[in-house]
Image 1 (cartoon, rainbow, N blue to C red):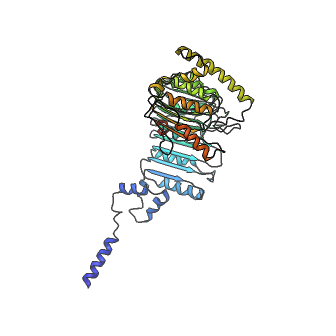
Image 2: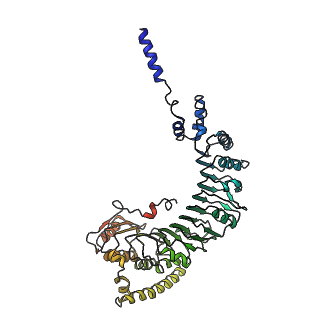
Image 3: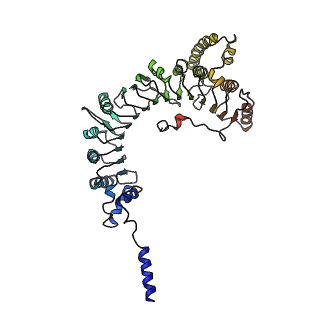
Length: 492
């Protein structure tokens, strides 16, 4: 009986044995990284060996949510950073919400991070106080590789900065002391590869100059809340973009301001571009776009110059999103004629404005654009020796990409208007190499099931030059563009 009791006690001791504590400290640190910061710090009370394990964590993430007490949160985080012992702080992410006290010493936090040889700093300040300047030591940190600054932060650099290791810089809705501070910040990054900028109005910069010789990828989004913004994003705001980056390969620009974009110097090997702009860019901008292989483009009336003045000799994949119901078909026709190697064409007409309800102004603009297109296309077609009828000239001439290259067509929010129908019929009847065509519908409010069925039947009956091509609907087919898949272009 005594032996049985001893055996039971031995089994009980084995069951209660602390096997986690005997693991190497490096492994315990990896386990703690899976926990929120408060839970990780709380493990210090488990036993004496656990008391300092959390202080070796190379990553600290602290987010002040609406459910936390801001003062106690800040005290907790400040104490945690003071007790932190890791010689290298790989990752520090701090988010302070609108309830954060205005007397919080944010600079002290940044200084501690720099002392710990910070590699990645993500600082988001949303308090109700004015934007603050960060300590000078941040802009001379030799170990910093990635810097993300958001909201109530003032970029103020009256001095020369130097960030020799910074590879990626992200600036979200920050303010700048002046344009000189912006220029000094960017010029202090000799190895910068990726720059992401999201601007709000009143950030104290009119000409946003990006002069970074090493830059490989640029995302520039100029948001604006001025009155008169239409559903497609067209607006009138101040603040232009000037690019001087000869190594640039990936470019995304979203800017519907009146000032628009200009390029002084850029890589002739620009590979991928997403361009959503509301005013014509300068001639250099158009020249450098001619080298892209993957293009995503949103345009309004004034920017059809993208389609008529650029020879996209290397373009393989193109996504078009017109924002008006007028004139856009002509622009697509011109782009097809200038893209001899196009294999994938996507058209998104979700932003097309209704055909009815246009005032005299738009009627007049339509007349001007139609006149321009008539003379331009008459010149192009006359050089090719196509027939005499105006309509015949428009729809009889077949661009090289349709006759020998185009393999995939996707049309989002096809509405069946006269222009849409003519363009779709033209592409299907002219694309000899087409393999798949995917179409999603845009129905009007008064469209019943019978009308929907009729529209689908009409689509299926359209003649196709490629006998092996398939006409598919969204349930069976959806193409995801290379631009959309790119990590920088799918952020917003």
